[in-house]
Image (cartoon, rainbow, N blue to C red):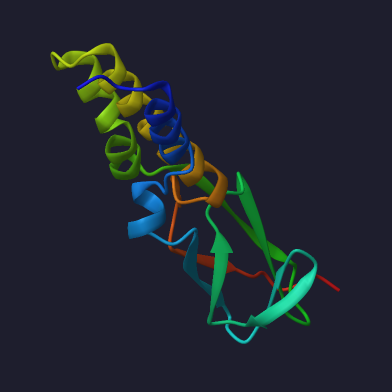
Length: 148
């Protein structure tokens, strides 16, 4: 059977629009526990009060860093920076079809389709944050008494 150009185009588009493994298995967000010593301090993220310690806040994985600020009357303001890192499990799942297409004795058409599927999955996971995870799932901030 010969592969027609239309079949190749359809399969290529399906690969590009493909949902990545990270999208299917992981959320593009993570819950982070914010604690302070002493407790009952305001938790501020993106300029908005999002709770009081101890608090669980949901952060997007795709942003390169998040600064969490904690404030309490009579104490210096404290903060915590949480960064992202690659989720290597997702990266491996996204690129496995492309690697397989390169090393297996497939024809050029099949290898190309596998690379397109792989690239589409990686792009999808990158854009929705599923290709990343946060550097930590909790943050404890020590607040110091403000000098008078």
